[in-house]
Image (cartoon, rainbow, N blue to C red; front, side, top):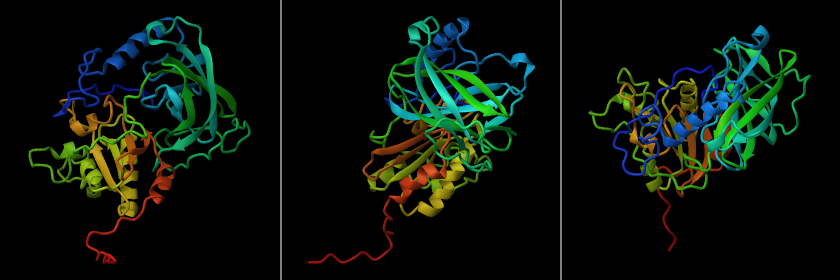
Length: 381
């Protein structure tokens, strides 16, 4: 499960409109849902083995734990891995959400993470867990949620921290806990999250899959020159296919729907691209993340092209926009934000939650592009 909030039914994946060969997220031949990528089907099958063995003790990204709190304690914690596209490699961002059995969110401060390897896909649930890395994760607040992210820390959480983790109303403050973690082998992993919450040390566990290779473009990869839908799309294109918020026909944030990624790259302009579906996003993170990118466009539009790519061409028909399928695996795994350099190389990527503090250092390094209408200097003979 990639949604860090109490899980619900996610839309399946997904026929892709005019995808072209080789597009990511196109229909696969595995799994119970039509179009589900084959690795997801294999992961679910393996997870069922692990569940049958009783190894998964709490909600995980691919399955659920029990619905009754231990000892009838409503403050008992549940964890849900909120990262997308985890794969073997050097340390990268790992996200996990925490909430209570009575659906309150845990926010603020930091928590301890301890990982264990459960086994490869073929034998998940049969091997003894192998201890893995440990990390301290800080709270990463969703933009616009009324909270601030916690300071970066490398030390263990302090039990007496007045700004430490605590229960909050899930309809207000929202966010996840983030740490840099590397995984050395593919298969099923488990994370134990521990923190002092409500004056008591509490912990929760969640399982997740680590892939051998990434499914989504990484920093250092060449950006796909995508012809995403814009305000200039033909009248036959539903407005909601350009932005799912355009149900009344008016497309919000026009500055995010003017350029294509392909056009910006051809012009040698950096790109900040957000792939999201603000109306249909199950995590409720797409809207705030898209709003953040729109706010940054107002200030840094002279340094980069800011682009929103709507995931769904037709939500009811479960048809994905080709531009989205070229980049992400649209099976509830959104939002994504990518920063692309003027040379067409992906500089950074952020899954699910990104903040202004993440993006501003990247934007501040970009030069201000000259306005095409400004007089150009005369070359010196």
